[in-house]
Image (cartoon, rainbow, N blue to C red; front, side, top):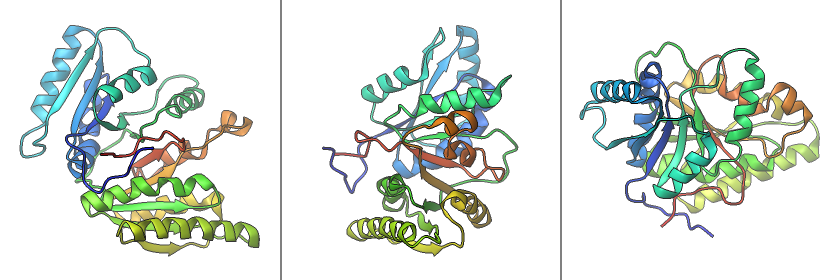
Length: 281
């Protein structure tokens, strides 16, 4: 079993599958603040011909100054198309990869089908992941405030370890939002989840704010987005759906709609699996 450590491992890296120049600004805007917290390098996995790769490399060098980011940026070039999951897993084993940042969802026709298919692939990852939303970039962003929604799902509390890293390594403010249910048994289950998380944070000496809401578990993510947006400089950390039912295949899992929130608040997803990657000695 992996042992959670209280210090950063030496030079971790963040994997970024990135296929075009247009997404560089979006990626650096989000990836650099996260990398600074973990003292990580950035590893871009680029797919394209030699000419496109050289253009991409020049653009990265031009847009990343020592003042912005003093750690190493590495580019790995794939001349032919690759399948995300095995390539990411291969590189995460070779490197000390701690998470994956995808520049965007697939685009084109049958958009929802492509997005759900993409989510099914990300579900296989041991690493936490972010999927960014394209759009206008304003000001500067940093994950200074972390929002952790806790509802009925047992997996909601399984994000606690990764939530704690942001406070322990970056002194981010931790905010726990919990749902309320009319059914007493359901409401008690939520309280047990909250108690578990609070106890873990207490053992790790991680301070946190407890924020009750007036919404149930199905509306909690929407409420979290609203509060995180108003707070500014926020990151939401959620657990992905453990098992997909027919409703998830037809309309998408909860995390898909949270990631695509209209406020464009960044979301880090944690896959609830027994071999989840955690920072270790």
